[in-house]
Length: 386
Image (tube, rainbow, N blue to C red; front, side, top):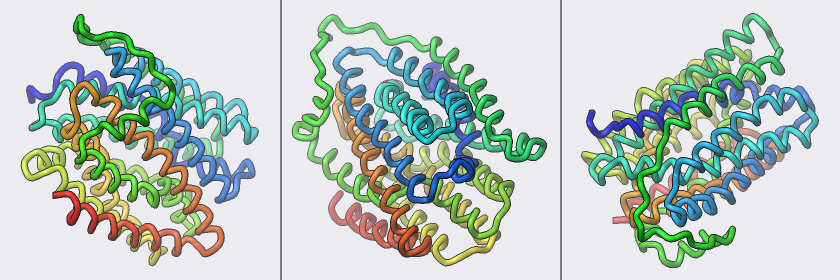
């Protein structure tokens, strides 16, 4: 696998360690937040604000990375901030501090995302983007298997000891920080000049971006507006009467399918087309959300989370590979960062909206609405983008 270079391996290992830390906490987060007084609506707002923080930063730091010609410093600092946020949530459980810790974690993500994905793109060719981004997603998501598995084992012996779990999650975060220092930027071209980068300068990219970029991103953002946090999926399972171990077990299963499928689906996407694999992923997503609205059976949940893993593998890395293939290499971090920024802002709306619909009309209405909108997005991709 010559296309999986040393840099791709390092970035993938960093993501593996970071996701192990983050996903060790993610499945228990809704239960933990409810235990300290957060309602479903407040959980939705928390996730929305956290994603909005990341969103505003992704576009700006992506543009700053392109303008500076550097990638590694953004990646190093971004992963460091995300690691530090874990013990903060354990030590300070007041709502204001929880909001701060989640915002810090997402700020770190915003800082690193554009630079990291641009570095991945630089290591690939247009014919290997699906493979490279798919491999990275597979390694990243392997952490989402190891993290919840570690949490499941820990909580088996120490039920409800969430504080200690948050502290333990700092250890793989430290491993991620250490690994970032193996990264090196390529030598800058003498023509690269440092350009002033106002915070909202990335918004100007929309006007000068390729027409195909705008068409693709419009479809992606329409989907993001109704694609709420995965926490609500887990909360639906929990409220169906499942034990914590079942909730975490389903989440591990979903991530295992995702991790095993992302790289092969990336290879398939390079052969057929990124658009085809992505839209098939959306079809699967719509079916999953329809199923979530209609069932409360553990075995049906198992099948749905299997499909949800295939959806994630067919869309998350593929979307970034698609964007990097339709933009100028010198603008890769700006293009991906801007998209990711708008996507995060859309996620703020999606999580808050889904939480509100759930609160007023019930979980079934929230999931049905998302499924219906997704069908509309699928039609858009097949009719508008040729």
